[in-house]
Image (cartoon, rainbow, N blue to C red):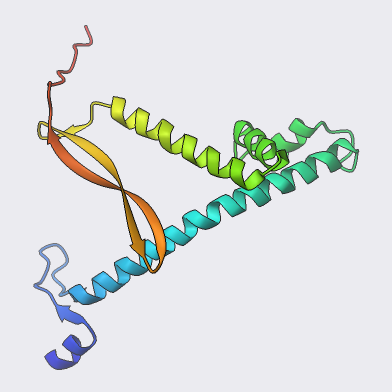
Amino acid sequence: MADKDEAEGVALMPTPPRTGRPRLAKSIELLVVEIRGLMLDVASAESNLGKKRLVAGQRLLELRHRVEAGEAGDASWWDFYDQHLAQFRTRKDAERLMRMAASDGAEAAFEAERTEARERMQKHRAAQPWGIGGKKIEAKAVEWNIGGKKIEARKVELVKLERTFAPTSMT
């Protein structure tokens, strides 16, 4: 039985204290394969995100034109948007999508938006006093080449805090 479990990449682990039942654990090799697949899925999803945002912006422009032409009755564009689409994306994001989709070189505009968002997030994170056990969390940009695709990621490191942050009293 142990040979069969090992061949499938599954091993019996010690009984967990909470359930009293043995659990099956994947082998390290299977975990590595699964993680690689998940990382490639993430890279693919990130790549598709820009394409989908571009298409969403184009469809919003088309819908806006049709609503303003009266196909949806006498509703204004933003009233129609609030009633049908606002629960999915904010008005600000819808405006951004339509602005980028309407621009010359829409794909470049979407890439520029992504770069600006990344830079804003880096500034925001750098300003935060996050820490663990007296050490500050620092994220550094790294690039990996997996299967011929460049993947940008963040490498998180703990570094010693230069100063400590004490909670202030509420009185």
